[in-house]
Image (tube, rainbow over all chains, first blue to last red):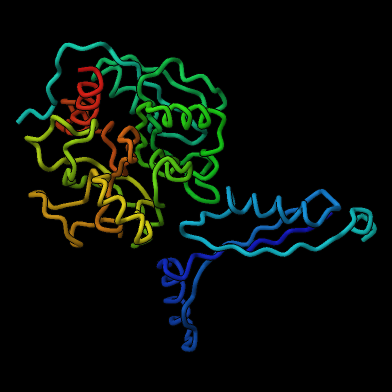
Length: 90
Length: 242
């Protein structure tokens, strides 16, 4: 089993009005050094296979076709192996 | 001036209005097309794959799947959409309104993407739209009317496409509607949501798929004193059957 952690960011060329609005809040907080706030998405899920290549392929497919829109977003992900029994033991 | 559009004698076309979980303009579309314009209309459930012999498919406005992830992203994978994509690829007429436009983009039936409005606000108001192409089957025959007055109601209507896509849209005359002044002046001042080049509606290269943010179905009834939306529906029906 793999745990996938996906980070989705707006492409640098695309304006992020939400990031800009949040940054106004930072200014009001008195945080004067905060610059270039950009808001993205973080998604995590499990991939039920022991084959890492297969897991990577499936996660890429999920990202390309559904989780991210390549017209406006870039994504990156990591996979970490774990076994259900370990988790249950915790 | 009466802007209802010419209605010549014609075969009655069948419209299919897709109902996704979270669609909320499906009944408006049904009402406008069936009760006002007197076409045959069927609702098409998102879990079905049968288009019920529809001649024109409407993807209505709303918040399909709660707009989760991105607008239209999940609706695009509904079973009915495989049939709609096949239908469109074979030349069938598809009109996506608001959330329907977002779904068409996610499905790859139209190029580009719709981002959050630049103001971050949900905008609900009437706008003027310059008709940029009178040759499409959705607009041919409404030439005497240069500017349409239609309502918009969206939070994610900020059209974006990369440079190459924009050039292709312009070169192929695929831009159908742009936000404008009452007299048809297209400038930033009349851009409600930050859309690239004031784009409000585009068609695909084959001219059988139209996506638009404004709501023609909310502007069909004389009782509401707004009927510009009927121009688009009547133009389409006249052009595909006559």
